[in-house]
Amino acid sequence: MTRKRKGLMRLLALMAALAIVAGACGGNDNDDASSGGTSTTKPSGGETSEPEEEVSPSYGGKIVVGVETETNEWTPGKGSFAAPGTIIALSIYDPLVNLDANGLYKPFLAESLEANDELTEWTVTLREGVQFHDGTPLDAETLKWNFDTLHFAEGARNRGTLVNAGVTGMEIVDDLTVKYVLSEPNAGFPDLIRANIGYPISREAYEADPEGFGNRPVGTGPFEFVSWTRDDRLVVKRNENYWMTAANGDQLPYLDGIEFRVIPDDESRVAALAADDIQMIQSLRGPSIKRVLSMMDSGGFDGALSAGNQSSVTMINTLVPPLDDVRIRRALAYANDQDAMARVRDDDGLVPNAIGAFAEDSPWFSREAMVDYPGIDGANPERAAELVEEYKADPDRSDGKPVGAAVTATYECQPDPSLLQGAQLLQSLWGEIGIDLELIQVDQATMIAHVVGTADTDPPFKGNFMLACYRAGAGESDPLTYFRGAFGPVATTASNPSNLTDPRIDEALEVLATNTDFEVRFEAVSEINRVTSELVPYVWNVGTPTMVGYRDDIKGVTSWLLPDGSPGTGADYGYARFYNIFIQR
Image (cartoon, rainbow, N blue to C red; front, side):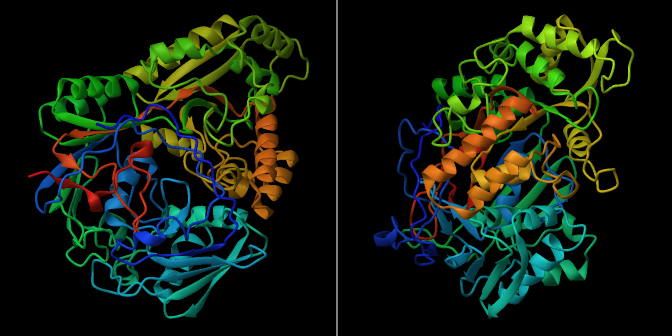
């Protein structure tokens, strides 16, 4: 049994060597497992209280995995994967780069990754012999087509992320090698190609049906797409030509197939696991996680619980009155009662309160940098009420209402019982300080669309909301990647839902981009934390518990290895890597 209740503080390499060289494709080149990686990050994860039981792997069998939602489509760069969509996507696609348990960036589909001395060029060499599910090869030309077509084209969802990272293009070096060219240094570049920007798809399959590809994805991953019934289930089967082998020489993957079943209601999802209608679940809700933990204690089930750099928040649209006034934003934070929120959401005992993008046991955490966050020492409704009254008495108040008029706002939240109870708590707390809150129930996909916004607004990606029930935090990301996305230019950064920008943040981001020294980068992170604690783009609640729970004869969930034989990140953040999973016989 593996339970991850605390984020594990992983002291990180300082990127002394800027080359990442892969081990053997078979994953059994363990002599070099501790070298060949590079990272300045990995503030995440969990603590393994006891290792997963060692069992000889066996082939065959299918499992059903329950998730709360899916995505609008499965084309990388177009799909809104989020956590549920990502766990599915990881069965179909492989990333170019991944993280190991020590926070080092390691090649995955890439054979090697190397930067120049200025950190302005990053060269990726692909593994030989990797094929897409349709039999076409993964080569440099295909990877460049992916980059140009899906991610860097005008209007592409990821273009803003790449531009903000300084990426200006990609060049083909040889048949298996490409070079990402940047206009400026970027020490955190590997983080970009660890996510969907680094999930190659088959060019042939896409060009045969560009509109339909998102419904029938073709990647290089351990499982091939079979069918998808939207909002119901997606089925994949074993990729017989998968490129990766296990440390013992076994051809991966072990399972014959997987069915991902959408069960939006968490209670129903856990009940399905208990009844063996499904064999694995992903959950990001405290009540369900507590029930799975109880099932584990009773026997027959196992799971991995983690609480890293991810938290529930109230997302604030800082461009919309009255929330464009920092007094109102600080009032919201002062009035929030995090302990009550944890109890209402039934997250108490699972995760700590949050005050920023990094958890207290992250190497990037500094309480001193966040002393200005309202309510860091607990709720202060008196101060909150003072700020609201000050705003109401201002003849130039941003909402244009007359002096003394009520302060009002709308709050969007998904129709999940625990989330709605949390929203109702905030409605009460904020009502007591003079802010009238209207609650609006929307499904998750609609809410994300409202928060992210579109390119058609002024400015683009301004969003169509005031306050929203959301998640935030750096997760496994490099601080540069996270903060650049969270607070980049509004018009080109769809991943900045709060729409907060500040020149002090921009200066700190420049330091993060151009330095690999941990202490220098730590101070830059602290400066960003100081600014955001002052300006309050989010009201932080409590850390988000994440779990992969499963029947206890399912093995390999937390013990997967990277191609060079080094341990991966387990099931942190509710993700599973299915190429290593098998059913004990």
